[in-house]
Image (cartoon, rainbow, N blue to C red; front, side):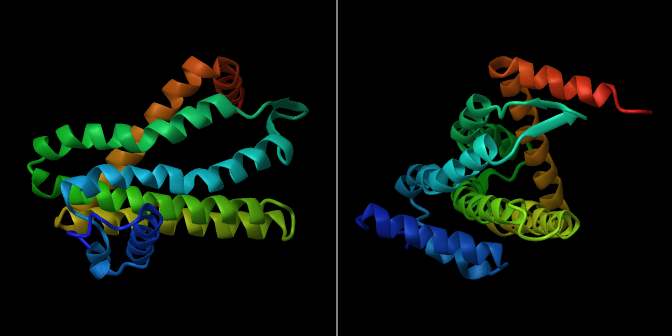
Length: 216
């Protein structure tokens, strides 16, 4: 697909999502589904639009179907503004940071293909996890079973899949790829905390107050 820059947007998105799905299934041939040209690099941020329906589903579920209980009898509203900002900036911010990270670690030769693969795989992971979480937390099965299933899904899609993405797209060893995954996870968590602190300080303060009040 690397040279097919004339493909219609919808077909391009569907083809790229198929590549992301194949990466999520640990298929190394998935890279062949991506447009690895410079144009494909910029178009890979269409992944944000592809994730939008799942984000809206997740936001609606949290705003009207769930409450965040930080202590017994104490609930706070869903931080929609912060979640929306993080949703919009996460992929572009990661791409910018990875410019410097890959140069510093001397693995920048495949930077563009890594960003393309990461963006579209992130879209697949987000779609799967958002839908699965809404279904599992809707009460159709027990809380204990839902928690176990969600934990397994998060381990597989949140860590193993991205480990495989970095290992394949950057063409690095497995141990090195694991370090890249940890770096990305810490980066995402840090950005999310900063956004909460700035745009939803009540939520930020309430969560940290609840953490500090836990028995030691």
